[in-house]
Length: 177
Image (tube, rainbow, N blue to C red):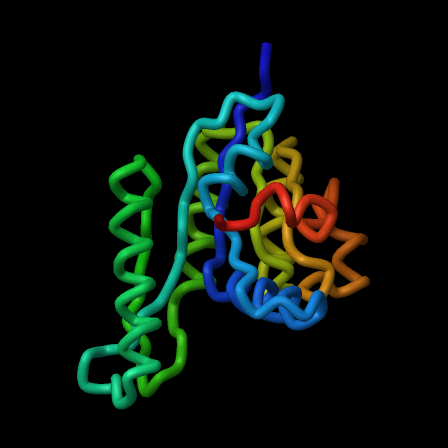
């Protein structure tokens, strides 16, 4: 019987890691295809659900065409994800600062862990703010993996996770085409 898997994606952390990876390989066109990423991460598991956490600017804070482009791109992605059954949580930025995204992810992670909704939880983020939640879920007997680019994974995180999934190792496979 396959272990139940739930994936939690911190969009901001994934986006930052992707941008730094693209810079490292000197390819400004590199982007991650979320659907390819999910397919790769869920191999060998019963993939129950994916949760996607993001933030967008409030309309009155969008000042440039570049900001408008990225805002629209995120809204389009959120719509696509929702159509594919992915639960999207979007928080409006306060004075252009992301607020509440980490708390929303941690809340769902803990609640789903307590309810026994998954055996394995994958957090797509190397954010150290999740350490206490990771430890709490592990005390429930759950396995926790972190998936992110190497540039987003602090060395000390090895102490807290059951497995680190280095996205660099299969970046070509998850590349948006």
